[in-house]
Picture 1 (cartoon, one colour):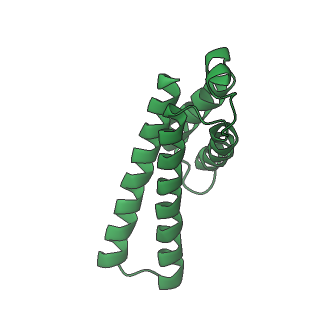
Picture 2 (cartoon, rainbow, N blue to C red):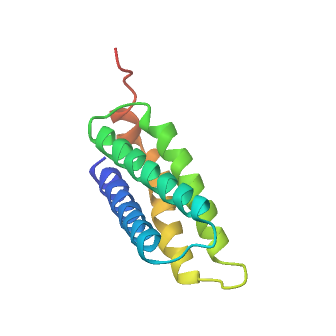
Length: 122
């Protein structure tokens, strides 16, 4: 359970870093579409908060974190797979995204995590 929470916190911190970079770019660089840049930054900020909420509640053993974490990991895996292809493929970024996503998906279905998160909130 602690390993699961640790990986989720690392993902949340990485998202927070990406959000800070997006905010910095929004302030200093000229975007081709300002509205799209703002929307992307807001989405990254919301995702950061959500992954932090999942990580915190994984330490509390909440049952709902399994479904939420699966959704987040599937989205991260989709980003990773997109990083392996395209005009400028970045396999290094793809692996950095894909490995933690796979680790979290595997950990979510281990007996200790299932036992810890099987009790529903009253």
